[in-house]
Image 1 (cartoon, rainbow, N blue to C red):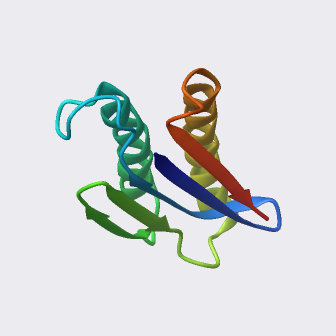
Image 2 (image 1 turned 90 degrees about the vertical axis):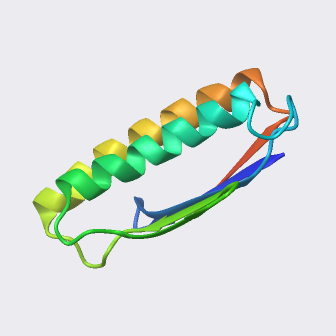
Image 3 (image 1 turned 60 degrees about the horizontal axis):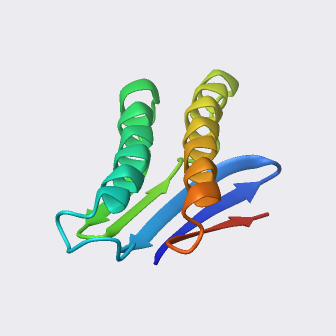
Length: 108
């Protein structure tokens, strides 16, 4: 199972992590894992491209963690939330279809 944790502070996403494997295919050929990875990594790439200062992150096989720098200026915070909310929407849609293979926790 893939476990995603999205952390909030004052209704704003401040960090997220994803780890594990869906188990729908062998490692390296599981299309669901690849989809979750693509959504999360694209969000990270967007944050790295558009934010200053850059977020902290860690990536390994089956693991990704990203933390926004705090505090962010208003303009930077708006950009970050658009990117992260889009990631959350995509992941929740995946959970709707494949809930046995992904767990999303929203921590407020």
